[in-house]
Length: 241
Image 1 (cartoon, rainbow, N blue to C red):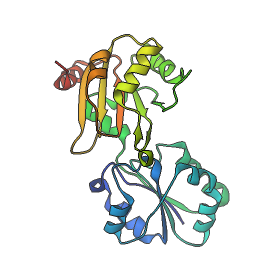
Image 2 (cartoon, rainbow, N blue to C red):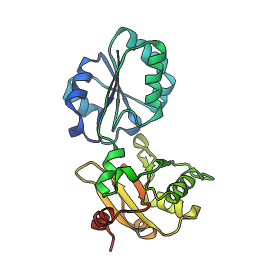
Image 3 (spheres, helix red, strand yellow):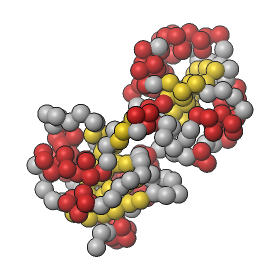
Image 4 (cartoon, one colour):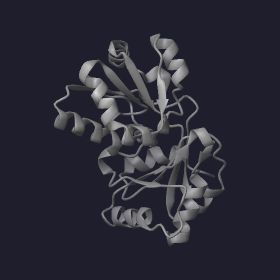
């Protein structure tokens, strides 16, 4: 049996269902790519089992190895946030189907719903994009933003991170990139550590948000589209002076 287990955004988010599934597994791999808020050692202490941190490349390149293990015993892959937010993890399930391997999915709290803390309606978000470390000649995130704005939709941009290298794309980096691509000085929402006790949300013109200090991670950037008056009222609670 193969288990794909979402952990949520913090250790306190880990559900009883997730703990039960982890305890049933003989081997647990943790996707290290997004494991910033939940350390593998602390989680191992909670469930009383060893957890093997692995890079995203391991999950992609060693997929057959992992699933072959799942033919004979219970194998779990742990993912911070929700486990089906990335195509890598969906591919694991697709391979299970092709190979005739039974699987179970345990969902977790995700940044994709935590953005509701800003007051923006989840129903009004368009396509989600990301801004990577390497942005030279990169047009895709700005193109996506323009398409969403044309339809009046909000845009969530996830910002790249590499915790092992202590390397992160920050909100000011992302705003600077978008302004360089031609974005006007429109309203933006800068967020860090959404869903956590020390979260931060600021709202204002792009150039003002870019000057704000963001020193905690992970971070994301939201560019609102057409807003309802209730969304505007809530957003103004985070407005920069």
